[in-house]
Length: 131
Image (cartoon, rainbow, N blue to C red; front, side, top):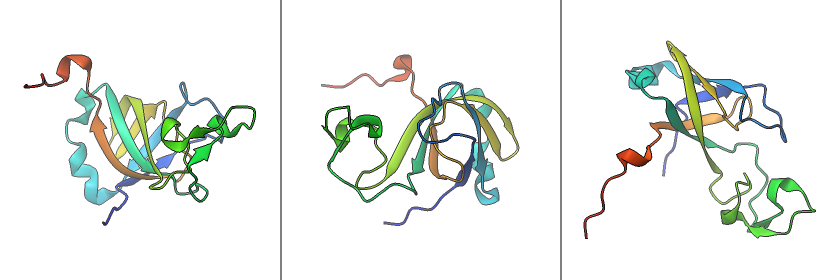
């Protein structure tokens, strides 16, 4: 399996900070900029990224790294310490300037590799299941 970054996060986020109101920039590499065509039409995006600074994965963690929180299975948390170290966050797209996406709510540290970006699916866009 080969996964390559399409860009990198530029952010002042530090571990433990609340990112909901934080504005960040996703800098898309030049060879992928064409893929941003008409992204301005989207209000919310899903950003997939690599927890490149995560510790070796474990199967149980204390949520938010706080030992006062009871242990939970890693798949029941948003911990970066996981087998494939893939992070996902829904963000608000504020604007685009060339290969730069200005977003709000990204919980990724400065320099984090971005793997993919997709429009967030609204409830009215979900396909009707066929039984």
